[in-house]
Structure formats: structure tokens, C-alpha cells
Length: 568
Image (cartoon, rainbow, N blue to C red):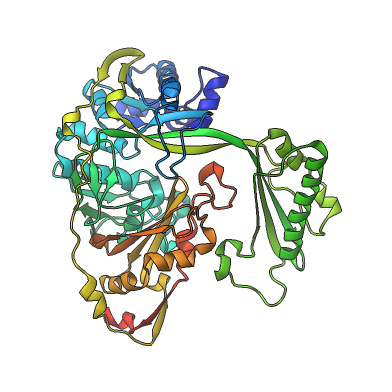
């Protein structure tokens, strides 16, 4: 959203996702009209009215009549000055409200989308809204779900959560990637929902990919926090007891999903703001030949020494942060890296990222990469992408904002039609708890044995991010493995395993929280302050924690019986 804000500043006609108009809609606009397909998208970005106007031009050129609605009101930048003195702090870090706010958007819900469909819209364009709301909106419209049908609203939100990342639930980034056929033609997900809340998830016939318990369960835990309190604008969801059952007879697989529970949403919206915090650049350079890792590290260190010397001569401060990684040396594994005894790999890649308060200093860094190719290590083959691009660092800032202070406006074909009113009678800020089955005695009586397994033998994993926190979901491949995972994979065990990633603000701070999802025999771990700032603020090669689940697959589950024989 911050990048789209910058685009709108350049032109009032920009600020939305242009590919949605030119690539996803324009080539198919006649088929969409002819078949009566209704489209909902949050591609409006910071300028949904401009996005709708561009769609109207596409429809006009194709000589088709479409009703295009816009949900607006998520942009809070007009309230910036009022919020500065309101004592607002970041939900994650507790930091005070920044002075140099760049963008500020509310995560709207599904009800305005449903209302736009009630008004006859063929296409609904929104700005910032929760991704799952794009699916829940039409379900509310189709089935007439009430504001207090919390279990149904949670089920519809779960459907949206599972398909919001497209092919990630049809075999994309699956732990067992080698079992997924035809990546080049991978099918996107389809959900067929009933008015009772259960749904079938499948994909089009004759497409690649795979739908199974594993592929869908992995996506359930993706970017998840507390599964019992998944907070959304329309409902607070409990996904801990969700069940996923494979259905035979579907080309490419299908599953039935049920068991989501809901409770009232809060009286607040979550807001995603960004603020400017200096500038950054990243140099990526392949290095070949013997001792490639050593050459890469010395080259990166030499570039930093050279630029720091220039900074001191010109009166610039030192870098705010730097990150040297040598891809190919398993730097990201920390103490778990496998070190070669024969000099290491003969190919490696320098990842050198820097952050500085002043653009001019980062521009000096950018210009000083190329000289390394003639004045430093042999085997430096080039700079991937050319001279490193200097870009602003836009850090996230999350806070809650009263729903009663947000005005949501609905437009149809460019005309304002109504102000959407949230009904706060169906909200609550009380914490509703759901009891999980007691398991402590089960773990105490677990048989032990002489066997050791890699986690990959017993579980699927998937990881994602929320700001500067990562999550790693772990799902047992068989219910009998689950107690052993619960016993071994404690929060402390995960904190010890990934200790090299954390930025600890307080000495005794607990940085890992574990949650349970017994419905899918799963665990979810939230790793606080583990991403070096997260997103575009992070200087790491994995700023969103995408590889953390893969890294955990080598974790050793020790002193257990022959688990494989238990399921034969």
C-alpha cells in the first residue's frame, strides 16, 4: 500500500494494481459479461475509484454494460494529524506513533462487499480489506448470513483464508513438492460452499497440482497466529478444531472442510500504517572458483570498509544496519549449517544489504559494487540486476482503530450511492475462550524407544510472516505421531533452534509461543522479532520467513519407538 501511495502521489490516476485491469480483466471482459461472472477484488489499492474508472474504460471499449462498485473508506491519511497525539502505540513493538507516516489503511471486512453485491454490482473493487473478506462477502450475499451467525461467518472466512494465496493450497510450496505434478499448469482452487458452512475445496480438471489433506492443512496454518483467536472485522474465528477430509473420485483431489467456530468481532479495526525510515540497497553477486565462500565474505567486508572510508571523508554517519550473507554456505541455518571439510562450495552468491538514514550514502554504496569486479576477489562474475537500486525503507506500524470512527462509502459506476454503517451491536471486546482437550497425561505415558526421526518423516511444515514475526505450522502426517510432536516441539525447543534469528529486546523475553490445532493434529509456533524487521524493512534474504518451515524439517525427534510400524 505504501508503494501504491507513492504512485498516486505521482499521478491521481495511479495508486491501484494495473495488472488486475490489463491482464486479469481486459482480455476476458466479454466472457465475464456473457457468462454473468461476478468479480470481487482488492486490487483498488490506495485508489479504488481510479481502478474502477479504468475498468469502465475497458468495458466501454468492449461495448459491454457492467455495474462496477467501489468500497472506499479504508484510507486514514486524512486523520494523521489527529492520531499523532492520541497515545497510539504499535501492536507488536509498543513503539510510539511515528512522525513521518507514509500510508495508513484500515483492514475492512466482508459486509460492505456483500452490500455492494446486494445493490447489483457485477464487479466490486475495494482498497485495503482482509483477504478472506473477498470470499466471505459473496457468501453473506448469497446465503443471507446474519451478523450473529458467528460459526457460519468463521466457516466462510476459513474458505477465504485457504484460497487467498491461490495455488498455495493446490500443491504450491508443499512440503512433499516432489509428489505434485505439472507445476507449469497448476490449477487454482475452487470452493463450493453450503449454507450450513461446510465446503468442498477442489481445482479444475485437467490441471496440474494436488489437493490433499497435507496441501490444505499446510495452508490452514499459513500466516496464522493464535488459531483460537483469529481476529477479523466480521468475526473472531476459532480454527483449532477444523477437520479436513479427503474426498475420493475428484480429478487432482478434493477435500471437505468443516468445524470452524466463531464469536463476536471486536469494536476495532486493525490498521496497517507505514513510515519512512531511511534508505536501503542490496547487492547480489555470484562468485566462482575454489574457496568461493571465503572470497565472497572478504569481498563484502571490503566493500563495506571502502564505503565507510568514503563516508568518513564526506561527513556521513555509519550505516544504520548491514547484513552480509553468503548464499550457498548455509548462513541462514546458523549453528545448524553443514560445514564442508574440503574448502566449501566452488560457487556462492554474495548477499550484501545496507540501510542508511541518507539516500546519498546508499547511492555511494551502490556505485562502489562494480569496482569489486576488478579490484577484489577473482571469480566475481557480475551483479545480479545491475547496479543496486536505492529504495526507501517503509516500515510497518500496526494499531487498532474504533470502527465507529470509520466511514465506509459505496460507489456504483462512479456515483456515490450510500454510506455503509457497521452495526456495533454485534461486536464485543471480551475474550471468548474455547477449551482444548486435556493432553498432559497422554504425554506422560508416551512409550519411548531407541529411534530418531527427522521432522520431515513425521510432519508437514509451512511458514509465513506477520510484520516482524514469523509463524511455523507443523502438521502430523499421522494422528499417532502427534503426541510425539507435542512432547518434543516445545516453544523453548523452537526458540533454541532458531536462536540465531531473534533480535531480543529484553533479556528474559519469551520469543516463541506455541498453539495447538488438534483438529488437524497440528502445532503453530509464532516467532517474535525473528525477521530482521520483516518485509521491505528487513535486510535478510528471507524477510518473510518463507524458508523457516523447510529449515525445521531437519529437527531431530529422538528417543521414540518405531513409529512407522505403528501405522502399518
